[in-house]
Image 1 (tube, helix red, strand yellow):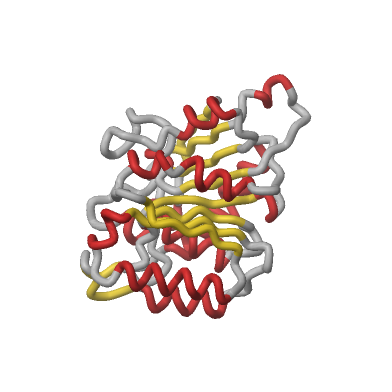
Image 2: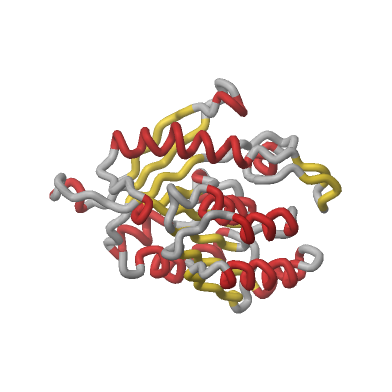
Length: 254
């Protein structure tokens, strides 16, 4: 079952409402005493329903969760849709100049502070979660994939595992590399990271960025599951196909 409600992120978009989506396993109705791990996801409007998705195609996460009876709560938040780069700013951990899409004012740290200190406590209060680090995960694609990698590194005391699909490492590879090298990372940190074979040429030197990040994560002893997706493209239809892979990684021996 999915609960939807409107909320605001005052520090960035003021009183402008956005939608929060929370999936709770159907088994929770029959077994109210059970508690579940939580997966936080970016671009919540693209996660569950085609009707809400930006391009008319979602990840279909509800169908997958119901079909597989996966014991997990998913909390997903709609992004900022401002046409003046609102999503890019909200989902960029770093302020950068001269990117392929122009200058980006990074508000990713503010976004994560809100998610960790406001949204997560609300989820833990309202739903049957297991709130500790070992059962708190984060995932996203594209800029949301970049943010997921940032979150599991910079907020490693909160998130134990992350799924980073097609992460936009091209935005500022050097700053992400520096974060990987210096972040305080617990030895049990688990990261799933992939990139589509067809999309590697979408951005300059993307293969180099991806290869370098993978190497640095391994040097930091992150338990990494890494894939180049055969024929993979930069779209929700492709990311939907990767759900079994990243869900298996997130829940492996939890």
